[in-house]
Amino acid sequence: MNTAINLSVVIPVYNEQDVLPALFDRLYPALDALNLRYEIVFVNDGSRDKSAAMLADQFAQRPDVTRVVLFNGNFGQHRAILAGFEHSRGERVVTLDADLQNPPEDIGLLLAEMDKGHDYVGSIRRQRNDSLWRHVASRAMNRLREKLTRIKMTDQGCMMRAYSRRIIDTINQCNELHTFIPALAYQFAQNPTEVTVGHEERFAGESKYSLYSLIRLNFDLMTGFSIVPLQWFSLLGMAVSAGSGLLVVYLLLRRLILGPEVGGVFTLFAIAFFLIGIALFGIGLLGEYIGRIYQEVRSRPRYVIQAVLEQKGEQA
Figure 1 (cartoon, helix red, strand yellow):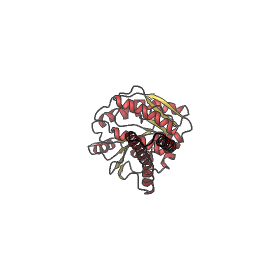
Figure 2 (spheres, one colour):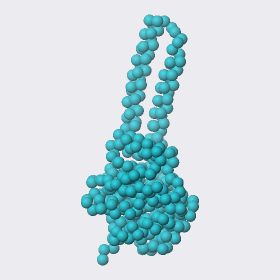
Figure 3 (tube, helix red, strand yellow):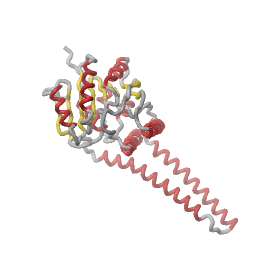
């Protein structure tokens, strides 16, 4: 009898008490219909509502296919997914958000693509039900990310993705604190592909990603996978230096030919402020890279687990 787990579904949870009952009602029947031996790994990311208690109750009802990892604080969605990867045992692993914006019934679409030989399956939301600013921001960051990292993902914001065990094992060997999992998996994949999945309005509650969180996430993506921003700024610095030298020569010749004048003071102020702004931007960009180096060299744990709810004898 084959006792191997065919599928692991990793779901990070943060303050989702209003969504979890509906998630349970749809997720388990959808997975049962696949006729696979599966497990669901919930990772509670320091929820302050009743999410942890509800996950514990669900584990008590379905301990054969449910595992719950409880953090002792809030460490972020990607670190929660990494913890789920480390506790997963399936030959294939699917990540899914708890908000039901991506229907669990579409997990079969990702597995069907893997049956064709693909080791990593990304997803594209068929019809996004997000606000206008989320659409615009997402498209802009997609274009910028592709130019900086050369990683092509049609829809980087959709977390419903499928990974082979080889890719999961490789990701588990990476120890960086700040990363972007879909991009990391794309680098390790040999035969990646994408599939279109459904996208629904959030079942309840509000998105945990603010504009600031999205900006920080994209900083992690760009600084974690490319040094192109630093190279661009170096080129900009050389161009500005050359332009400044030409300006000095021009002003010197103008003074020699026309004599001293006062009329250009405000122009010089504007140029000085512009150059100072560029310098401050460059210092901030350099600080982003140095800050990440500082956080990495401290070698602090990415997360701290309070408890793991699982059947005895089934530790990963």
